[in-house]
Length: 97
Image (cartoon, rainbow, N blue to C red; front, side):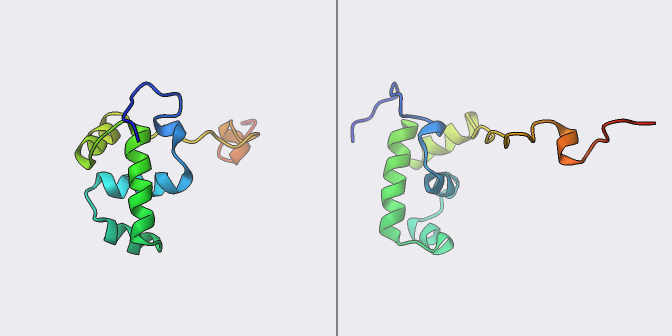
C-alpha cells in the first residue's frame, strides 16, 4: 500500500466498525496476539486490520497512530434520527408547571 495523507478515503470516516475496534488497542501498544484474544479473532486478521488502519490514518507505525488518536480523537457517531433533542430521550419534560 502506498503511504498518502491526501486521500479521500482516509481518516476516521474511512475506518470500518472492526477497524474502530482494533485501532485503540493498537494505539495503546497492545500486541496483535492480545488484541486477537480479546476480540475473538485470529492474529492474522488483526495484522490485516492494523495494516489497513495505518494506511487509512496516514501513519507508518503504532507510535504515530497513538499520537494521531490523541491529537485527533474519534468524532462522535451521529445520533439516531428523531432522537436529537434531549427531551426526545425522556430526560427533560416538555413543559414545566
